[in-house]
Length: 140
Image (cartoon, rainbow, N blue to C red; front, side, top):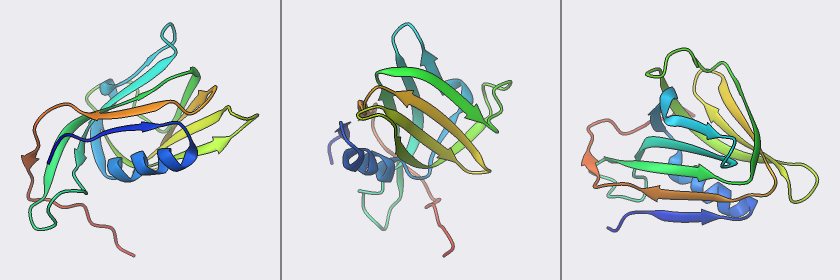
């Protein structure tokens, strides 16, 4: 299976990226806001939900959000760049169209609110997948 590459320009597209990144694991230091570039880049090890159901795999992947005007976080350990985060979902809260906030929700009650002029997101796998014995599981 070829590396995943997705582009989001509206809320429906962003939901597809959210599904691909559900249960992605990363480090705080890999969430980088660049005000001069007006972008936020996040690198994760994502579970390949689109892969074979019998053999779990993870792959290094990057998410970049463009047209970013501000970033705020809550309950993230910003003092420790090696602190682990587990991404649960990405949602969009509309503002004055087409602006709004892309919200990254993490396990443990943490989130990151990314103010954007419009939805401009790109997800791309960065390398080859590797096997993992741990398939994410959520109780109903």
